[in-house]
Image 1: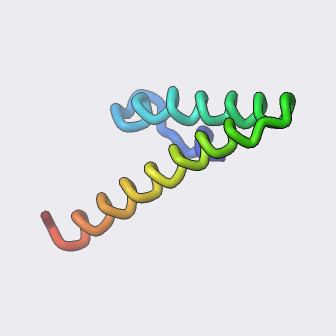
Image 2: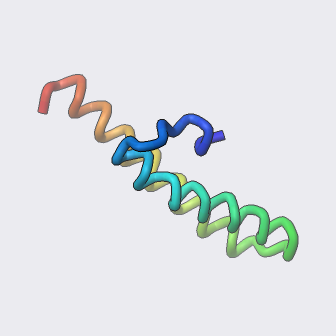
Length: 64
């Protein structure tokens, strides 16, 4: 779902696409191999991205 929201040709989208693609691939691998460790890795990336977007949104709202 995250991948379909990206606008091709946008520098942010171009940077996020490989991250999202990696996360999707890892989720498939975790499912195929029943590996919780892989899920934890993907969760860490997702949390980091969410925190980054939260910080960016705060900066936009405050004008910093």
